[in-house]
Picture (cartoon, rainbow, N blue to C red):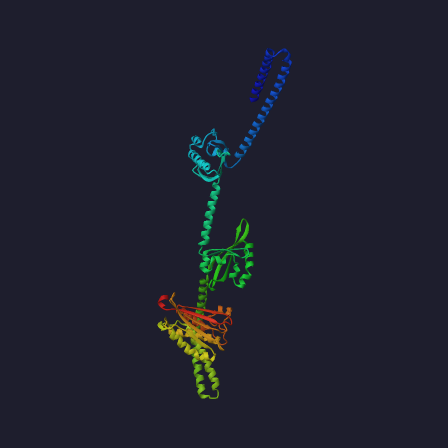
Length: 547
């Protein structure tokens, strides 16, 4: 239509030009100049016509390019997953993509040259949101820089969407406003994912930090990457002291040799592995941990190992005490059935030997040996009976220092025979406890005598006594610098009939353990081969505390 109009205008103009100029030429120009004027006006007409055609073509080309640019811009912004709005210096809409129009329910509204407050009249539900946009636009103009805000938009279904909105104010060189570009991306899903991730991290942190068991993490080289607070509670080691260190630093040499083999087996089998290890706490005391380890799988890659450990030291100690108690019970049952049967013929044998000793003077040496051996058998039977039958416990208030002095006096002669010195360090103030004095003496005779026999040839046995105020216990420590006990034998110390002595019955320490147990106390033995032995006995000051 536009082209037809241009053709008609061109034809009418040309006719007017031809007839008009011919009339004027013949009317006012002398005849001699008419041919020159006619040639001149024809040339002029050709030039003007050519210029007009060039102008029209150029204008059409610019319009076409403008339309192409407009189409490309429209295609670009409509293909975006963000809403895009262009506004002029007054805040009036110039262009918006389909997403933005659908968002504010303006698909069928002639939005151009209208402000947000004007468009609010066409979108009742989103009217308030559009008016708020006008206010935030003004803030972007005032800031005179790119402004980024998060806007929450209420949807018609009652849900909300969060948009990360960027507002770019444009200015002319003189500082006046030129326009405003607004781009908003829906980040609702991202916000929700971040929220779920945060919740998941908080749940993980709660599970990790507040687990009643030890939780640890290490990489595939065995380096500790994380520990929960319960590790410090159980072992005393601080979190910062162990992070980054290799777990082998806590293991025995035997266990550390199998560390890489263990890690490889967990990674390859990709299932939980159960094991039990002993590690020292910060004070050097060994604690037993029952552990479960499994691989950490992230996107199909094994990046490390996470493990859970429970301190079962007290459980194993209880099991050990039960095992000892069972053995004592078995020994007691055996002793009850045998001891009396042995003692009756033993009395007869001893009587006949004594009778023969008075009548036969030639074999006195043999009779003395026989009597010593019979007395030794009688002593063993007495220890068996002590284990076999419940002892009547009559606790009395007794001075520990006095009882220990009596025991030392009794054993000084034997210590001299072994060339052993007995030293002691007792408090000046008497420490009294409730105990059965005779059993108390027997307990420390057994322990000190063992120390003397282990420290022969110039050794020393040290005794110390102190009151533990925090637990209302008396602590008696007997330490020697003798031959010591190997780790293998130390594990079986106190078992009935287990002794490293040539003529030992293994009942002395068994009886001692039973005496300590009947007094509701504890006994601990620490020893190292060729470096001596330390026995610590702790007994309650009052039996009422433990009853």
